[in-house]
Length: 114
DNA sequence: GACATGACGTAAT
DNA sequence: TATTACGCCATGT
Image: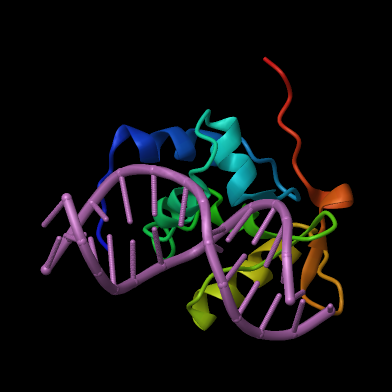
């Protein structure tokens, strides 16, 4: 899987860049906020290119996969990246329950209108 | 154009 | 709750 670096990706990056510390969003919501409902897969596709890059670039670790009942969990396939994501989030205050899931009622990011 | 692939999401089983 | 089945859509072969 390579990198298109298209305007599609930059649209997602702009949304991810707005997620504040200690908060998380899901692929579906990022796509929606970016004005592209149905592009959840592509959000992940675009973020995969960021893992391992700039530690202080985009907060890629703040995007998780959706789970039923307002919960979210790490969706990265690569175990290394997945572990890194969890550590990074815990360092900024995000809590994972016993099943490695995050309660979106508490840590979910709701973009403010503008 | 057909087919496979992928940090996804929702519904059904 | 865990699996499976589909739907989704840009890319690459």
